[in-house]
Image (cartoon, rainbow, N blue to C red):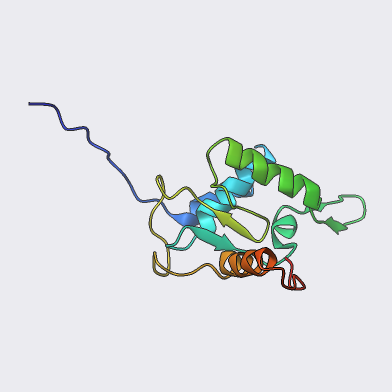
Length: 138
């Protein structure tokens, strides 16, 4: 008889991941991943408006009080690094962060819920392959 390998799991509170994402002592790629873990729905997707993630990681100039969003290129690099480290799934972008389905479950909504961002990308990709318009680019 072979021993059955257990795969224990536990639930987590999403607000804790938001708190961790706000901690500037950690690298941006980890904080972006933690933002996704704190925001994902049951389908594993966390949708954002254009520039919203950059605003989440804004910095305040203490001399002027000016709030400066994180540079979009830094956000893109952080997302790529989080994917490379296994914290986010391929297909993640600044409009939709995707947590790994093999490691994360739960959240608000339904697991079969369609991600509007990825649905739009798929439709655009189909149109491009057929030689159609791409005017609704993200």
